[in-house]
Amino acid sequence: MRYLTAGESHGKQLTTIIEGLPSHLPLLSDQINESLIRRQGGYGRGRRMQIEKDLVEITAGVRHGYTLGSPISLVINNDDFKHWQNIMGEQPIPEDEEVRRTISRPRPGHADLNGGMKYGHRDLRNVLERSSARETAARVAAGSVAKVLLKELGVSIGAYVREIAGIVSEFDETMALKDRIESSEQSPVRTLDKSAEAKMMSAIDQAKKEGDSIGGVVEVYVEGMPPGVGSYVQYDRKLDSRIAGSVVSINAFKGVEFGIGFEAGRRNGSKVHDEIAWEPSRGYYRKTNRLGGFEGGMTTGMPLVVKGVMKPIPTLYKPLQSVDIETKEPFAASIERSDSCAVPAASVVMEHVVAFELARALLEQFPGDYFPRMKQAVEAYREEVKNF
Ligand SMILES: Cc1cc2nc3c(=O)[nH]c(=O)nc-3n(C[C@H](O)[C@H](O)[C@H](O)COP(=O)(O)O)c2cc1C
Image (cartoon, rainbow, N blue to C red; front, top):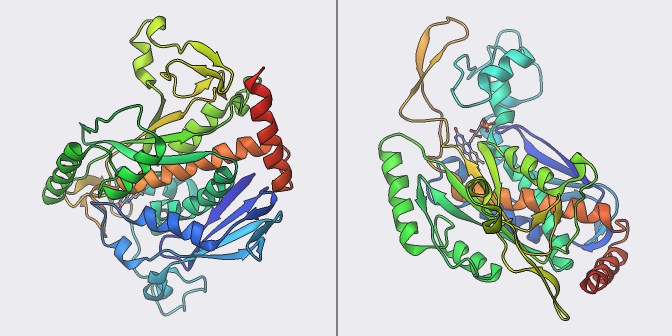
């Protein structure tokens, strides 16, 4: 299974095409919309999210509520396009008119300057319109379809904010996913710890007041993945490596940890590795889950615990120094509009990006053309490995 996205931030629409999904998977646009709405919320978001109300239209690959096995095409219209038609339209500009709202001032921390050099765009709008995190809406749409497949196979996934600006949320690590999801959905910053929540919100307020921005750490938690999904035999089939790559591909994400993550480099092996046990009803399991559900590029059957770190948003009301590419003069980078903290929204994005990689790995491992056959194969495999 793979997907592609197309669309500019202020363009007509965002498009996602997913190929390789089995036939006969029940799929409704409401299931996709639920995810899109979750991405748009979160304390600390700016004006753009009030302008756009993301709703998907399924334009191909689904009939009467079921997938056909053909490519699925999902479209999200940009309501704001009506105000940008002259600036972002595909038709040539009449000779007596000038292109409006051109940008010659690259913003530090964005793709503007490198992208302009690479594609020869002297109007940097041609870069930022596509490099904008608006594209993550299209990625959430793809992930929401993957989540439907996972749910049907008994795999549940959720995400929450672990840390904002150094304020760490503490909670009972044995907490079930269902409770984690419920708690994060009730929190304006999508976190599980009420006292950290209040501090995170005031850190966001403070950053906003100072014209600054803040980042943080997101955690994705998955229950129900069968053991042995992924592979140890080739670098590009290792599931943890694919997840790491896809998380770092989210705008502003700079690193990934599994389980205790970098802490593993500071502890002795006896305090890192998870001992193996077996019970007739449960099959094999680990007594602890410090490695976050992965060994040898494959799932262990324990919950998956993946963290991703997001840098602070680079567009600041408090301007950063840059250089105008036309005049070569220094200037202070000003802003169009920006969030001061997008970590809560980014947690929804990371959840969906990880969901896609999990569904992709399952589809590679089990017969993936006809969903009922696939489901049967996954269930049979779960039983088989219990008594391995
Ligand atoms: C959900 C989400 C919302 C974002 N919103 C903004 C924003 O409003 N303003 C901004 O400057 N950057 C925003 N970003 C971050 C930029 O898109 C990102 O810093 C930029 O693409 C470069 O990231 P990179 O260096 O990791 O590729 C957002 C990122 C995410 C994931």
